[in-house]
Image (cartoon, rainbow, N blue to C red):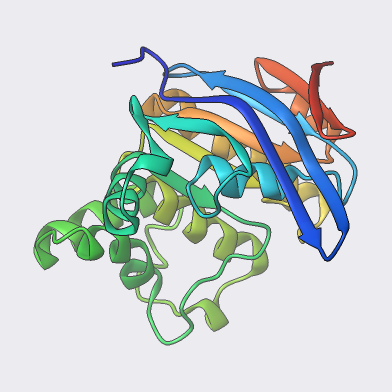
Length: 226
């Protein structure tokens, strides 16, 4: 088994329409070891979200391979891929995607319940992680009763509740004001250190990228060190 949490080799993603072909990613190589923090910086439309979707097994590459936990995703069934993703990965998006009819506690507990965990354990772990994000007094609040920053903190707690080996964040503070964005970025990095997960952040925010151990630029479908 690879010592890396995730490893991509020769990733290509192209979209074909009739005789036309648009190549978004052109031979991406990337590896993250436990505890790594890596930022991928690129302009809107450069393929950052496409890269995350390929690494997370949410989409399939046109060429190349992604190994998560030493297992090639393209060789797994959709069910096995989903199980591995639930166990090894956490996702935080620009939009929180919380379920509006459920409380903060219930939203955060959801990944554990999907993974066939007991309800009592799921609620206990969800409360623990929400406490880490400073929302211990908001457990029973629904998303509509939370601020934008609080909703994003719930989304971060949901991504971390399974104790994933890798957290992938996609412009997680793009919809927040500057002060709240900085607080959420600090929280992501602090929890990364505390829990020991690897972190892959795609962002256009140079300040956030600069707080990660490695910064890579995505331009013309290729990754280059910054």
